[in-house]
Length: 335
Image 1 (cartoon, rainbow, N blue to C red):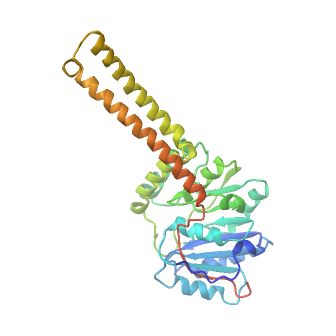
Image 2: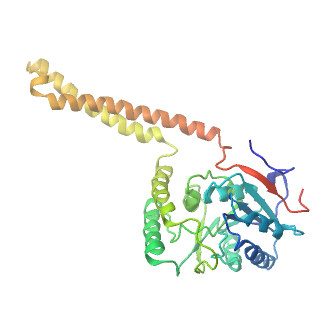
């Protein structure tokens, strides 16, 4: 069961200009200062705004302190998830509850400076749909952070064709219609610019400051992310190149394999009946290869057909969620 303490869905409410979405997991040392700095920066923009904090199953006082920050204020929404679903799920939950025309995503560990939000808004105002942060001068550990990040970003640029430098940072601004049109799962929040680019969005990036985490320790270490990023790179390539047309890809491979096997087998039959040669005595390896190719070709072609059915099912069930909500605390004067 999904629980949601909301009387009116976010889509039915008139929204602010800006929504800032922050997933939190055991960030009790940062959350109070984070909200204060966000309010200072957002009030300075002169635009209407809201802050959406997503508690991703924290086991410390993160939720309690977030609730304290919400008291007597009308700008803070808190979404509590039923468990720890991960950073991507936390962001998606925040996107789903955000009502702003512009959605800014950022981490909750104070490494992202809220004072830089106006720079993102300037680029959105220029007509861009996605504005990414670029940690041009990184302060992280060279071996554990910077080198793996450079390799991953290089691979992402080559696979995606999107020429931005920093896919990994969460600090990005999006037009709401771009975010709400995409289906996000796994660790695909890193690849949102790629998915947006495939949909025709205009993308740019701006340099942002990068500091050593001032409080606490990272909850998403290299060991947790390496395999997921590797598999998501493969998933990304599939999404870009093949997702909408699996039969065209697997069908082509299967058909070529099938025709190759059938051609070899036809030649073997010709040798058998025209020259009266025994296939098992003279052509055993080729006979095995031809049969294997025919069977494999049929299987690969069938995989393409199954892929078409999966794609059809996917598009017919776009409301499936990768998270579950325990409770939502809207601002005190919100309906």
